[in-house]
Structure formats: C-alpha cells, structure tokens
Length: 118
Image 1 (tube, rainbow, N blue to C red):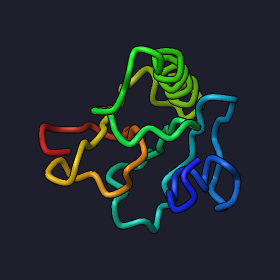
Image 2: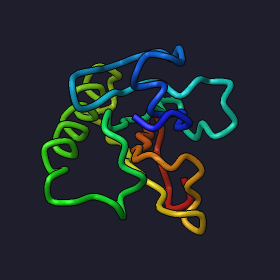
Image 3: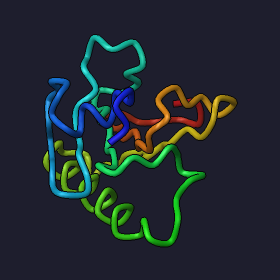
Image 4: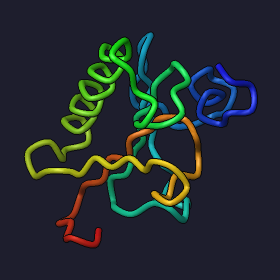
C-alpha cells in the first residue's frame, strides 16, 4: 500500500465505498451516481489490492492479479445484469491518457448501448 494513494486506501477499507467484490487480490466498488466521471447507468471500478501505478507497469508476476480482476469484473457484471447485454472495460494510462489516480483500475461501463464516444 502506498500511503497517499486513494485507491490503496479504498482497498484497505480506510475510505468508505459501496463494495461489490473483494478477495485477497482484487477489490470492486460502485462509482457513486453523483460522481461527475460516471459515464453509464452501471459504472464500477475494479482495482488491484497491490499498488501497481498503471497498466504500463504490469509485469509477468502480476498475471494472477490481473486475471482475478477480470474474473471479479465478470462476476459483478452478472450480478448487475449487464453480462448478457454487454459492457465496456476501460483503463487510462498516464496523464495524456486521462489517468488521474495512479493506481491500476479498470472502469466497467454498462446498462445502456455504448457508442464509439461512450
């Protein structure tokens, strides 16, 4: 855990969120409806419990973490009712890519038809 990292603090239970899934490697939570970045009726984040700054920092030894994050995303998609209709998984990398929290996280968007621009 990195002490000043918001997503590390969320994964550690220090910041209250609506938890959807948690195990020893991954944590999934709903993005609050009032959050200005929310882009779809279903919008949740999957984060690694281990601090990895971004997708650009993924190493071979992170394979189990990444697999667990995707398995958690699929499980929550089924629970949220978007597994059959479809959803989008997005990660931003670096400042030019729009990354604002430098901890690996995957946005999951669904609940409506998503076009090329969202």
